[in-house]
Length: 131
Image (tube, rainbow, N blue to C red; front, top):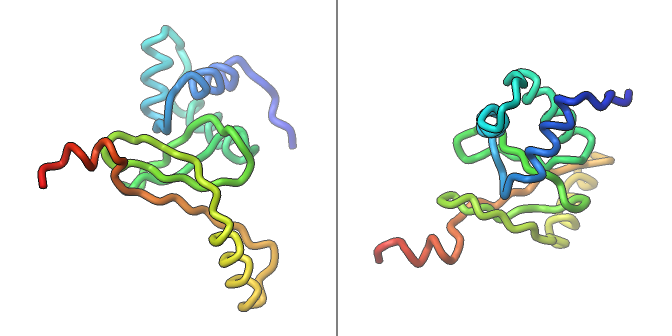
């Protein structure tokens, strides 16, 4: 089923594209309202979920369990995410891909999918922490 392109969905897409890094639905909603948009929070949640399911947005859960989103830039990939400043780096992980396929196959699973996000501290944040 193809979702129709409403002004609300386009507003969410544009706001997400202009946002650097990952952002929560609430954060994106606040940005839209500060820019004068009357869009509702429930609409932002629906639009983000649709964009993520269609591959137009990356979605991950923060260490606190909150869903975060950003405009998708490539196909399947993984992330390194700074817990302090939110810096996000897309990484290739061929070893993870091979492991996931092998682990699934060894248990009789096919068409396995996975999500790998690694949270840590970026070099800049690590250098500001007292020793």
